[in-house]
Every structure is written in C-alpha cells, then in structure tokens.
Length: 549
Image (cartoon, rainbow, N blue to C red; front, top):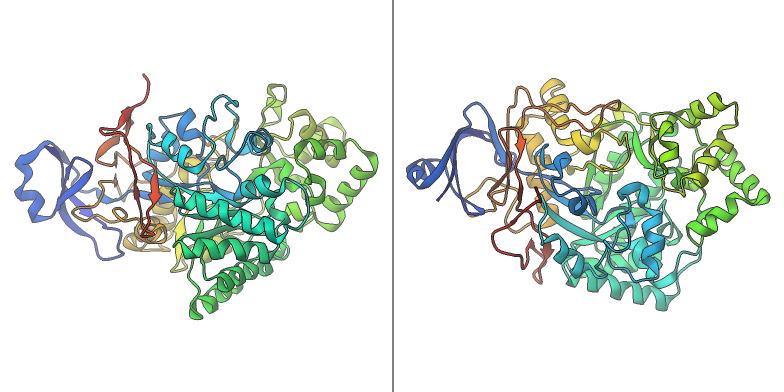
C-alpha cells in the first residue's frame, strides 16, 4: 500500500515544463507518475488532494552545518520544514570525522560556534564510516558527507602554521582516500580557518587528485571573499584544473566593499574555465550578510597552534598590538583581507550565558555603550566566551547575489548555522526565499528553472543514484508547496520561523511534514559514495525510526 498525491502540478527537477499528474508513493519509492499512478490509485491507503500545489523533488542543501544538530535535535524542523530532504555536511574543512582522541577536544572548541558542543561523551565515533553509521540510526533527512581538509591536516600536521612535508601530504591523501572509501562524496576546505589556511596550492592539488580519482569533488571555502576574492577564486580553479578534480565552489559570493558590482568578473572567470573543460558548480544563499565565528576574523598567525595558543597571544601586549594592526590597519587574512568594520559585526550567539545580552548587537554598539574601544571589546568577548561566539557580518551586495544565483551551474546552499540565540535566518529560510522572493516576486527564474537549481542540478553534482527527480523508481523525497504563497518567514530579528506554503514533505516515502506540522518520522539515511562513484544509501536499519516523544 502507499500514498497517492492527487492532481498536483509536477515540476520534476529536470528544468522541463510543468505538468499535472498524480504521483503514487509505495514504500520509500516513487511507484508511478501520471496515468499509471491514477490507474493504480486503488493500491493507495491514503490519498492527498494536492490540486493547485506543486509536487517537486526534495530540495538539496549543498552547504549545511547540521553535522551535530541532526543528532542532538532529531526533529530538525529548520530544514525539513523548508523542504530540504538532503544535506551535504562536513563543510568548510572542519567537522567531526575522521578524528582521534588528541584532535577531537581542540576541534570541538574550535567550531562550537558553528555546531555547539554536546560534550565528549556524545561524539562516540572517530571514522567517517562510524559517523555515517551513527546518522543511519535515525535522522530527519538524508545526509552526504565531505572529508574536511582542516581536520585531516590537524590529524597529520597538527594546528601549527607551517607547510606540510611531502610525506605528510601523502599521508593526508591516504586519510582522504580512506574517508571516501567509507562513503564520503568529496573533500571540503576552509582556507580562512585554521589549520586549513596554512595549506598551499600544491598540497590542495595533491589531495584533490586523490579525490578526483575516486569520482568525488572539491568544495572549498577559499582564501578570501573580500580583498583578493577573484584571485582566491582563480586559485581554486587552478587547483581543480591541475588535479583533474571536479570543483564545487562553496557559498560563492562576493562580499565586502571592494567587490561591489564585480559579479560579472567572477562569472567570466568561471565561464572561461568551464569552456576549457573544468567541471565547476557552485552554491549560494539568497541573503546579503554572511555568518561565521568571531574568532575567525583573527589573523592566521595568531591562531597557529589552536585555541589555547591564540588565547595566550590575546593576553600578550606585544602580540595584541600586532593583532590590532592587522585587524584595523592592514586587513586580517581571517577577515578576508579587509579592515574590520566593527559596525557590521553582529553577535548572533554565545556559549557563556553571562554574555547573552550581547546577542543581536554589533561590536561597535557594545563598545560605545561601555565607553570602550571596539578592538578591546572584541578581544574581551573572545576571551570571556572561550572563542565560541557566533557572528553575522553585514557586508553583502544585492546585485552580486542576484547575478551569481542565475548562473547555469548554480545550486542552493543555506550555509545555515543552527546554534546561538539569533542565528542567520538562512538556516530556516533559504529554499522558500528562492521560490518566493527571487522566483515569484522578482521573476529572476521560471519556477521550473528555480526548482532545477535546488534539486536535479545538485543531485547531479552529488552523483545521486536515485533522487533529485520526480520519476518512477526513484526515492520518494518530495516537497509539496503552494507556488502562490510559499515564502520565508525567518527574519534577522526572529530567525527561527517556519516557512509558509509548504504543507507536505516526504523523506524516503515517509511524511516528515504533514499538513504543515512535523511528524515524528526519522526516515533519513546517510548517502554514501559507492565503488562506482555514485551516491546512494548504504546499509541501514529497515523501517526507519521515530524520534523520542
């Protein structure tokens, strides 16, 4: 028996024209579409009238930071409520596998501002395989994983600012190959975060060569989104071209003052590379501000050796004077080569409850209210919050956002951080914002094109064997939305708000959202790279799971 979605407008994820059809779901598969589905309606034990609504493939979030939230908050309403049925984890070069007992404590502190920190006892896995197995115990949506370059570098080289030796590069390549053999789909990098920022192009090319041989892709957060951004993009293209590895540019945007109106230059750079045969895709979020941690704006030399070493430098007068000069005069490499604009840096979350009153305020505002210097205020917050502070940076340009999202190799990615009292609204609103604001209201895409960006094109990059289209035999990852009312309701003032106009979401055939409400289904699976290079669920417990009541 199954579920019949009756009379909906199918936008199938290919970019082709919409059509009206029934869709029959049996088990975790799409059993039939169109006349075949109507003819087998008697086999359905539930019929849902979706006339006037769009039936589309579930959305693919190509840049997610749900690595721990999928496990610590199983409902995962932020993502499933906006129609996301697959997320790509392990982003920006820092995540929780592969690790050892020495790297894990430093790593947990380094990215607590991204993911929170549920404690050492919670992180029971060490390898990529063990992490994916843990996901298969029951998650809200599907998840693929990228081997994080910075974590691998910490394992092999430590957290110090130095080049890797040839022997260390060879060992890192082996760690990457092992992670991909265990199911990862590629390699991520965070080249404004330690220790990944200490890698040179030769190191990255060597690791990407190993990834390319196995059919994976490289997804870098490159060295600058501000001053030198175009040069940083060109470096990533060069790494891909030299290594023969497919390239997926993470949150491909041009922020900060120096890049206003320069999207055309980036597009020309990418188009020229594609014409030469480089396999390139990219993702963006449909907002202006970015989000990261406050510690990320520090210069790379300050962070060499990890959090404890950085803390000591912030307490050393000579080092502190040098840090101030980098941030306020020269432009820190951690802050994308631009001078820190304290009025643009807003606190989005803290780990120290005593600092909760700072959330939603800029460093400039906090400093002014206390009669203090903004740099000194920044340092004080970092020390008191043990480097766990999340921030928004209000530095984007709308004309760049619109131009880049229309590129024919574009996909959607939220880059959504799910921790903090006031996170970026993109964690809750990215996909309905594409459909509502940019597609329906501004007309930047046709509906078919917009859905293709968010589904089929992303599935092709991930080499998903069985999802990303509305087609018989594929996995029943489906989203049903009202094209006239779908919209993001999450705002910077109130970011944790469920999207409007998405009444039904199915993950592997199970309703995750039913009548606009979250069910208790945990039907998601870890999507693992197979020996043939394709990506599909691996071994999982039959029948799915339920999250605790």
